[in-house]
Figure 1 (cartoon, rainbow, N blue to C red):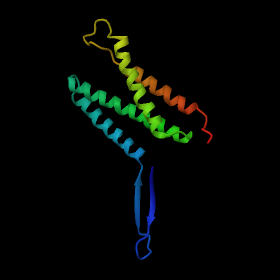
Figure 2 (figure 1 turned 45 degrees about the vertical axis):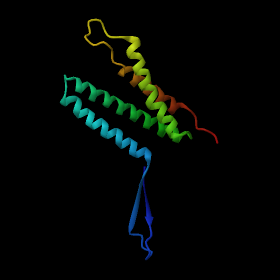
Figure 3 (figure 1 turned 30 degrees about the vertical axis):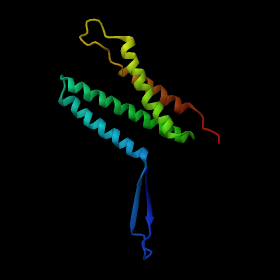
Length: 139
């Protein structure tokens, strides 16, 4: 969140503004930049192994947005941002990786593994819905 705060100089005038950018906003911009670069790289190298790497970086940035959304919802519910961010970011990734090894590839596929992206997306949605449904924390 950007906040503008007037800063008085020695003469007492309020001409200058100090812009404070929160860590939460910076991390959202980082994931947006990663998503943009990954999106372009995926389609620029479509059909090559490097395109798959870019696609996975795009998936990580989407999980980052899930983490940011979970953290924002946590703040509104009176919980800590970074704890919720870690849950919304790492849990879907870990479950997606586990599903790659549990489910295995489709028959006739040349790939040794299957994609865990669907599990990651579904898990992220479930975590966000959980944070939407919890009641406010009473302090």
